[in-house]
Amino acid sequence: MDSTTNPLWPGNWKRSTLLPDNWAVNDRGQACYFFRGAWHLAKATPNARGYCSIGSVEKSTYLHRAVTEAFHGAPPHPRAHARHLDGDANNNHPQNLRWGSAYDNAQDRRRHGRYARGAQHPAAKRSGVDDLKAAFAVQEVRRGVPRRVVAQRLGMKRSQVHDLALGRRRRDAVEKTLAQYPQGLKLVDGEVRPCS
Image (cartoon, rainbow, N blue to C red; front, side, top):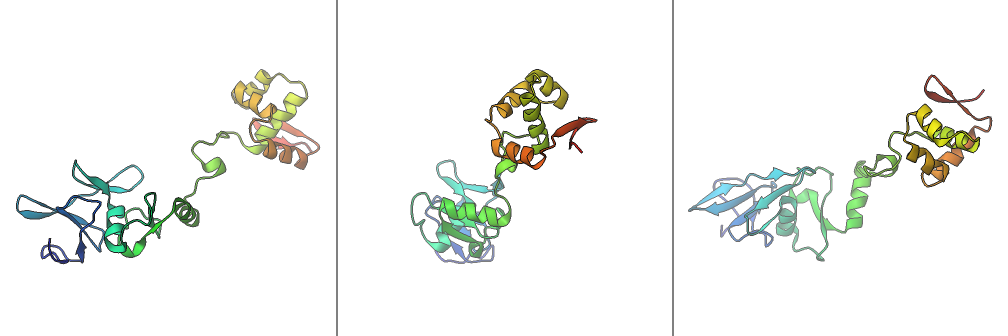
């Protein structure tokens, strides 16, 4: 593709150094390749996170990186991220893409509400235990109730109760909750409630 136009598909087509020589991308976020004497529109398949990978077996890359490189120049540094400004991994138009750092990309995720922190993080250790339940477990252990019994009553693992009691997990949240309810907590019908 010697010119920047392709008679088969509309748009401004450019080559990307991230792709093989017989590939090009356009300003609509599409890619095409030359094979057996003809241009073919590439089928970009998204991965589990929604990012489309394109290219040949010898050389492949993400579509958004190739479009960013073709329309905004080479990455400013080797670890640069191609950022989606609107947070949509399928919107690979050049006006939606910019080079940035990992920090810039994290800020974009925060702005779009896709930044997993605290309990929302998939590796969070507090899965299934709310603050009241955790505080009640610590309160009962401090009163001398065996950890095994506390775990059974709350439907938790003994190791969870043990970690809470030792302050390995959620120490600040537990202490804050216990301070909020100085009269103590009680278990009523499987639910932890403040004592009245």
